Image (tube, rainbow, N blue to C red; front, top):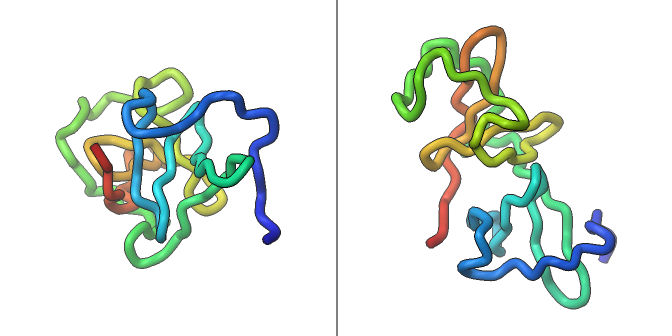
Length: 115
């Protein structure tokens, strides 16, 4: 099988490891430092959420989820986990993907968070 892997990943992802777990296709991934990790066999895969009907990558300037203040700006230190989505990075906010764009947050769809 040919897929992108995360080399030298010492952390073991599992329920309760401290990283948000999401259902991704037929497996569970963990958001970790801007990466979407799936550990199996003897390595950790680098995954990316697809741009599709569930998680579109369109501009939604009227999106107002109420999960953060309107002046909040997403970025590396904003407090929301970063998630690779297509060719860009989104931020996980209250179960859905936010994408900072042109002074607003685009809604790039829900993800299934696992407890």
